[in-house]
Image (cartoon, rainbow, N blue to C red; front, side):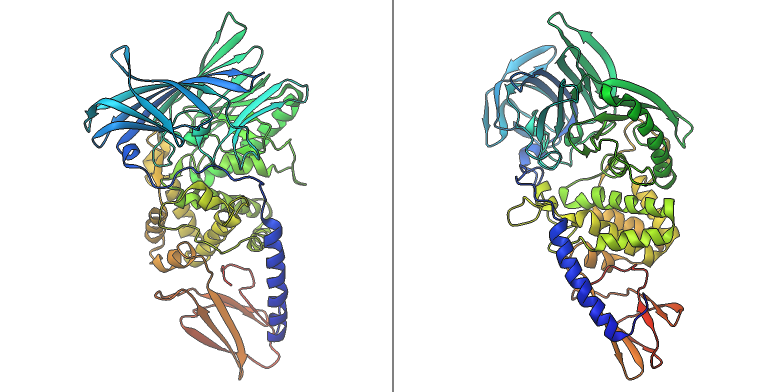
Length: 560
């Protein structure tokens, strides 16, 4: 829209009111607060690195309870005499043992304040390995608002059959099994053994190794995850599932298995969804590189909750709802997390935006991919109305999921800034460094070493942080970007663009956080002619009387 200065002021007022109302509307009131996950890592848990989890769980559906055993095999990196795992206080721990050489030795333990403290007989030295078995049972927390406030779901399918699922991103997997609940440590491989009543099926991450039919009318489903995995992504999905099998060719040339565990009522709809999924695979592989978990599978499980990025078994509960163009935004978003969260994982929840902001950007970029540049601009402008700017998107200090995802002071309202503001920050970076450098940057953020695009042994996965993306974007663009990251990611407030028409000139200047330069240019269109203006501290542009002008007409730059 073209406007003179008085219309700019009126539009700014209307926009401010719109933003204020939209923000209130956009916040999802969850009605409950998740438990804390992540945050500063204790010295006891920093002293070891998880190599393998072996988890066995038996479901008691009538009593909504579970009985389980976890064997954690770890490598010692610092001297250790007390082994600590996280486990919710809803459970009773019956034993803790050190497993070695085919024998198990009980050791004393305490289960308090959501942690198991197990006293080792001798101090473990760096370079040694240790296996600890925990046997536990109880009624896991029922998720009050899944997937945002998590736990177990004991639901029914359309036909009335049991339908069980887990979703614990904000809360951590310690809501249902003992674990080192911190994003900085992924188990390199994981074995899962889920025992459920027949004819129910237990769908999980990785590849199904075997099904054991037990004499008591149950079956044990044995899964193996060959890739590093975040604890919250380990998932249990149980229903009388039908399995749809398919495959799709990767950009690497490999055929990748697709497995969709769908409720029987939705079998035909499930086949239609796989067709859409193949298009999404092609899009992500084109811009980000190959699907990371080709050694396991592309998996989907229909769930009684909306959805979650459970690695190689994406939780899908969108009820096959598509937009007018047949697009399933929920599946697209959660599947995209196979790159932004599962391949590339923030090493602390202060980098949550690397998961949600990057994927939210891909959500909106897909609009451009399908409908063109103007549709992309329109979608980004809608995102602008929902951001809050009350805390940094990527603080330097360690944070929990709750601190990053939810709004203070009560932390029961969701915060869109790691989503929408994160996407808008990437949108602005694209403007500043240009398309070529930007898309190279996100490709190299996914796979810093192009040789890793051919790897499926788990070494393609990595932990990262915001500073790594800064280094990648600077390298690919040849520009210094510390000021950009400081203003947009380390600071809550937005830069303000001052626009003043006076004495035949249009004067522009930036208000930004003190102590940094802010060399952000801006596009200006005057009487149909557009140019990019370097603002610096301020700039004056000749303006004829009655000229119609628009500042940043496409909405490229995130600003107040």
